[in-house]
Length: 275
Image (cartoon, rainbow, N blue to C red; front, side):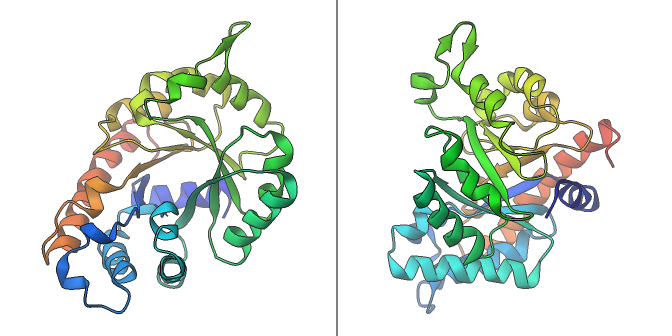
C-alpha cells in the first residue's frame, strides 16, 4: 500500500482514525471468555463494529507476546481477518523492533512476510543498518519512533547538541533511508505543540500519532499542526474505543466511539478542503 492509496482511503472514509488493538485478556467482557480464542473473538467484534470509520488498525504486539504461543495465534488470526474482510485497511505491527542488521532482517521477515502486516514500528537508536532490512519490502512501511508521548521521552529525545534536539536529528537523518512511500514517524499527541516544528522537517511524511483519548492528547491540536495536503496523519485511539464498555454491548459502544472520532476528523479534513 502506497502513500496515495492510504490517502484515498482517508478521503473515502472521511477519517484518519487508527484503532489500537491493545487487547488485555483481563479487560475482555466475561461473556467472551468461554470462546476458544477470546482475544481474537473480541478483536473480531471490535473490527466488525469500527471498520467503517477506521483507515488503520494497530495491534500492540506486547499484549499478544505476553500470552505465549496462544497470543501469537490470536494476533495472526486478527491480522488475517482484517486482510480478508477489509483488505483496504492499513495494519501496523506496533512491535518497536530494531537490532543489528541480521536480527532486524528476521524481525522484518516475521512481521512483513510471514504475517500480512503493512507496517511495523521500529526504534532508530541503532542507526541505518538496523532499519534498512525493514525497508527492503515493496509497499511495506517503517514507522520510526521520533517523539513519543511518555514522560521518559524527556530523558533522551529532547537532548540538545549544537542547537539540534535528538528527535530532530532522527527526523533529518532518517529521511535519507526511505521515502514518503515507505517511511512514517511516531509523534505523540501529548506533544502536539511540537508537531508544527516537526512538519518543517518532514512536511510530506505520514505521522502516526498515539496518545489521543485515554492519554489526554488533543485531536484538535494534532489536526491543527499536523495535517498536510495529503492529510499526512494516522491518529490512534486504543483504550478509549476498545474498552469504552465491558458489557455485552462492548462492540456497539466501540463503534459509536469510533464514529464520534471520525465525525470530528471529517470536520478537520473539510476545513482543509481535503474531502
